Length: 226
Image (cartoon, rainbow, N blue to C red; front, side, top):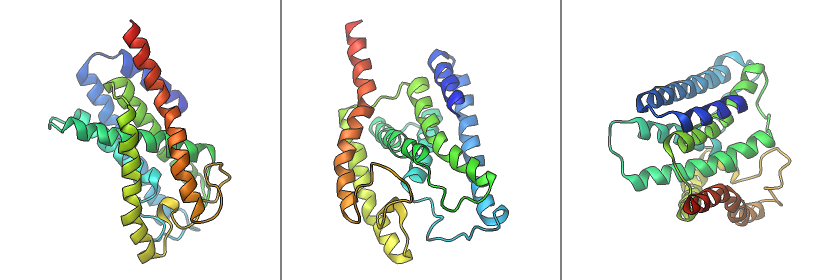
């Protein structure tokens, strides 16, 4: 997936034909849905040790939300419909943060809870890798950018999600977005017990997000000098 991402970044940057970009985008979308279908088929049928449950298997974790937002973001850029530019930017902002903030950390600190076979391992890797791949494709093929205002867009979106997903957690006795207890991983992002790790995450967000903004800041400065 790392190699494929590099190839797609280079291809998207060099490619000038809009129709070819659109075909590649559609292929990416199709593969994303195939991966998701395979993941749920594995949970329901192939993995005999897995017990599917609405308290665990709804797509309400941050990485799942980022996954679907990344697909939607690509759909918007290839669609013949005209979307509001601010709305497109908002979706990209949230996708970028969830991709390089959530999915990247999930690949570094892997949680194998509920993974019992090789299909599950591939699906877990693809689900997180594809968010990053989709974001990179949007950046290099469609010149999407992250700015200072984007930091607030993503921050407000993530905090807004706490209310409805927290209510769903209460109804289902679930732990979506890890609002009730931290994931079963060793990560420097989760400090302390509930609710203190949630407060630390709010602070860590602004520190981490500045590093995510840095490539765009440097790129903007370099372009201004040319």
